[in-house]
Amino acid sequence: MSSPHEEMWRSLGLDLAAHDQLLEVLGQGYQQIFLAQKDRPQGMDYFNFVMSEVHGLRIKELLEGRKEGHKVIGSFCVFVPEEIVRAAGATLVGLCTGADFALEEVEKHLPRNTCALIKSAFGFKLGKVCPYLESADLIVGENTCDGKKKSYESLAGPVPNLHVMDLPQVKSAQGRELLKAEFLRFKAVVEELTGVGIDLPRLKEGIRIVNDKRKAVHRLNSLRRADPPPISGLDALLINQVFFYDDPLRFTDSVNKLCDELEERTAAGRGPVAQGTRRLLFSGCPMAVPNWKLPWVAESAGAVIVAEESCVGLRGTRNLVDDSGGSLEELLEAVVDRYFQVDCAIFTPNPDRLAHIQEMVREYRADGVIHYGLQFCQPYLMESIPVEKALEEKGIRTLRVETDYSMEDVEQLKTRVQAFLEILG
Ligand code: BJ8
Image (tube, rainbow, N blue to C red):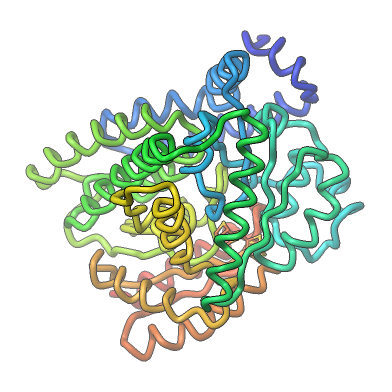
């Protein structure tokens, strides 16, 4: 049956046959992983709807917004300051990087030993299946890991509207200066694109919108500290993923409504699992839609994920921007301060991340940590070794997993996760 959005996808230049295939696989995976869960909160209906229309109504909405002059900016990283984008009346969207696509074509541009996340970005572009990429007026790349920074040189061919933001790798005064300079350069690019000059009231409003969105997910995360948590880790991950696509005001409202329901569930001691179920903290590389493999394996094995130390999770959302400044300059400094605290593994050294993982284990009462590293991801795989050592020294059981987006290792992962849960007792 043809989709009501077919014409829109055609106008964006998508490969309709390939895109249909992608949606079919996505739909089947969603059914099997999310809809098959028992006793989900009613508030998840909204997120089911968002996912069912993630390439449909949301794209239509963005395109209609463009007709009214609201530009769309796509990004691959949580270092892109959404506050500046909102201040200019534009919308920031995360770009699809959670599934393999057009691998053969991708490997003509990238070495085989490139992480799946970077390959996915290329695959969605070269395979013409990402309506977000094709709807964006500007795409922002960032010099984070070596893989990403070098791959943007190649991506600039098929993506001429690419702006590359340089980023520091050291948390020093010079590092902060670089971040500030790059944010100011980005602000100028956004102003030119939108024709909007970012002033104090505009930036204040942008900060308010994004802070509210982050506060809503903080509220959701806090509720997961209960035993049993009132929501599965899979559903919470999904919300953290939708964070990157949805209209921010509607998202904030929907998460807060869901949290009202979760508070009631917590008061009634109700949750998707029994009290005393083994609680896991996930830590490591970001999991973009539709990368649900490892959380699905873990929760199917009888554990519950209570938090994510990830850019699609608390690493990406923790810390608000201080909005008390009375001048544009002060607010811009506050934006820089907030982002400079993101403890991505590209920073060297990166002690804050280890401290944050330990803090999260305590706060979320995790019984163990699963460290998730994408194959060929040097920063997170390198960091996983000292992280595991430090956690184990403190008596926190840790399982290091290195995987990719294929389903080939599912059985092996099941066995390893099961054995880990047995060790946790
Ligand atoms: S701030 S984590 S979103 S860079 S998995 S591409 S690191 S080789 S994604 Fe990230 Fe920004 Fe950091 Fe967060 Fe490289 Fe690793 Fe691939 Fe990665």
